[in-house]
Length: 372
Image (spheres, rainbow, N blue to C red):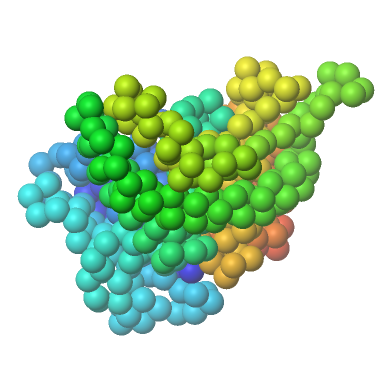
């Protein structure tokens, strides 16, 4: 899917904005605080019903207003959208909660939004993919698993979370009979193995594409001739190469009981990024980390496109940490994809028209929440 039109109402300092004629590449420039990041937040909200900066709705809705509204005209093949038939709309209210509609039909959950307008985000917070907690990396990997196999994965993950909550609740009681955990151990093991398998398969595909994209974006400049390559490894959350999840739960029972929670399983999964045998976050510069993140996000989006799922790419403050050559290399990758791109910068000159090649380009200048 791609967007042809975007309507924003009462979103932070954007009182009213109607962006039409949206192109393959959409460049938004303006001073800090002008509303350019808010536009990306609105796009993110249209995709998953919430902003990437805050889930607290009170901080997002324009002051003195009860609700915000974001509407987008979706088109699978860049065809004209008529009579509101292909509009996706998200309304969030201080008093009435969240309402999501597509083709004038109300959607019951965020799961129902999957595949309509997948959004990929590159912003200053994206450094957390390398430097942050394991939960950030799990969310990153699950994003592509969810969109490619979202029905099965979403169901498995819901079952897993329920069983995990029940097991942890029993563990927090203290002294309990191990037999009380048997039903929940079996459920965790069955669905946990399936979750781990889907993640591993997706990770393997991602790693292949990442290596190719990363090399074209510039990689790491070697400080010596035999400088080793950047590498990454998936950790399922237990040693699944040596032991089943059910056996792992059984062997860790006493320790889990002392700690009061389940220490092994997909909820503890992670991706280990290393350079020269050491954690990548310890060795890479900010520019190098952003290059890695860009390569990971692009590789992930390529996987979705290969599965027939196309979305939008949001790039906030593109020039930060990336030199002109890396920016040009990034857009060379984006030109070969179907994803619609929205990128922001302070100065229009920081987003070069030549990067777009033969793709269409639309520029927007924003001042105090108004777009020109």
